[in-house]
Length: 202
Image (cartoon, rainbow, N blue to C red; front, side):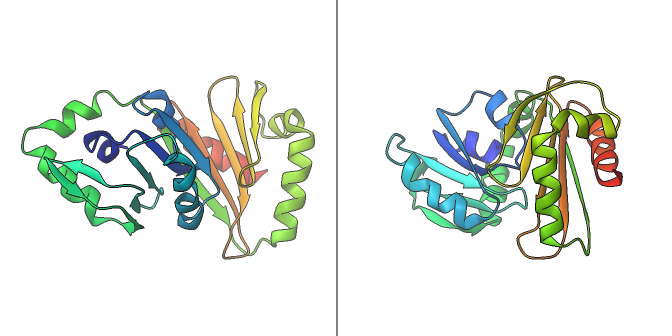
């Protein structure tokens, strides 16, 4: 997120599991959320390049992708639509010489994430669970037990529930293993951790 800001990126393509600090920062003209995986992020570049002059994407694992040429310190950095973990480190290192990173960090909305998984959980079982939760989200919350209401369901990749508290619970089958994955987001780390434990225990 900070790398994108320091490179003056206009628009981002990010997996649906990424933290909502991206939108809450209001740093970007457009943020498009995709299924999890770099091929989906790369595919979204075509759409973003129609209306933006500088486009990038990233994954929660640190992979950063450039969907267009960008200017960095007056020099052109060519598009690099492959996962690169070195580029963000270089940009942050350069910015850090002027104490720019800490200054930018203070502007990022505080949102905390947590995730875990249940191994040896058949994909079919995950899909059935997600379908049931989608049709009865309030019943799912009550089983945790959590108070509140679901204000949004995102079906981009699994089921991502946004609660009226601002907390987020996201369930999805793994794309490469028989696992049920759970991601949570909240305004406190302890709450995000607790949401994951509650959901996977249930």
